[in-house]
Image (cartoon, rainbow, N blue to C red; front, side, top):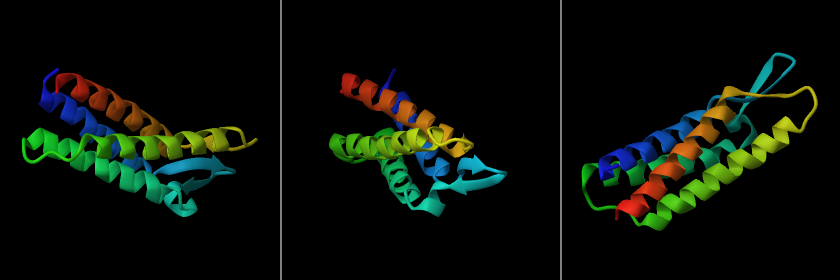
Length: 121
């Protein structure tokens, strides 16, 4: 993969984290709760925006942000998403919402993009 493709994966991954922050994370008795309702969504939103910025600057060929920023954003965003996933899925009667799946998928895309970007540099 070339640099633009790996940057695209990072952008998509960051977008998944950011958008998933607003989507339902959990549902119980027909009531949905997003990450922004509980407060943890701010961490995933900021991490997603940072990943989009890292990917965009790599894609555009402009001055790139330090690689550690992308890795830090991924660790924070994915870490919060994974912790909340296990917290939600371990609670009886609560189902995991689409926002959680969007963030987990986004984390995987960003991870692949960052790994491939490291290999290509």
